[in-house]
Image (cartoon, rainbow, N blue to C red; front, side, top):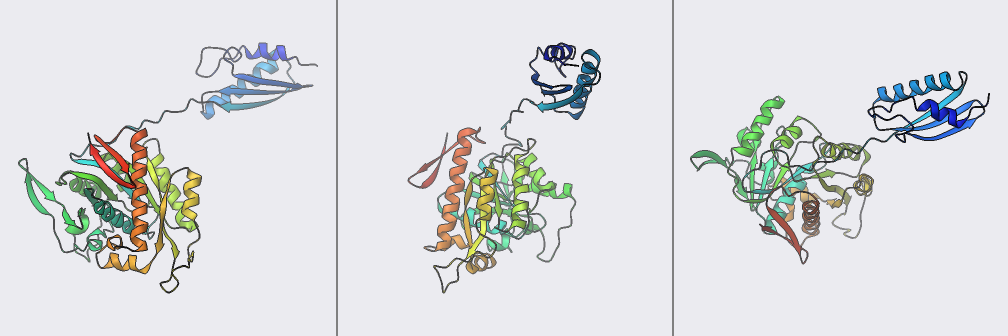
Length: 379
């Protein structure tokens, strides 16, 4: 039997499009029909992505053609989903914190990639550039900022603000700092369930007197977990910076970190990826670069994920030593390390400029870049 295209179209007029009132032909869902003897190939487009809708459509097409056209027809159905793109809402989540203009979360997919080191040096570099900087050590189970800022033996004081008692952050190198490490003993392990950790973070966020802050940096725990979600729910995070080393194991986890912030339910702009421990240069061979963990892995990852690459930080012994003695390496003047962190910081601020141009600002703030350096103007 010769199957005619007109007969197939007439049969398909008896099927209603899933989720619509028109039949399959009127709605334009039928894109193409090819007939080869007793074989019929049909291209269909529907806007319902569910498996149930696809199966129902296939069954109805098979039944109607076998009934109305030819009961022994061999039918191949190609269904394409054309669901309307869900618009991204760039609304700010969490409660605004008075006086804090921009909140940048610094995260890593796994531990040991130098996330806290990058955060500390980013903070002191911002302070050197004239910004008012706060740093919240949100790594509840492994707080390291008190050591890195040489304030391990300090304690936040209580201050009276509008009749309420608030914590006053500890300050050093022009950075205001709060950490769970201030409230535990050095040899004491923090063994808390998620709700307890979240409560402690909320107290450091909302029960502290941060004052006027241009940039609040959040040193998040490694991985993707409960603390990250609690932070995202509690604070209007402006953007996120992902830290990784170049090797494949770290990059695989960094990819998950980017995906976490880009989820529709979170939707925090990713300002970019930093490659830490990018290469090793021995002191006696300053022109040589040894790519111990691989070359430009994080840079290639940034290109693949279509997020900015913020810069690379070399593997240098002095960076580790500086963190151990409580004086971040970026405080050293006229060194390649200072230059590397300055380049990184300028790139972070520039991406924040780009973010605030395309998305609603977290606060009434405008960031401009003038002659290679950055400045904040309040409206």
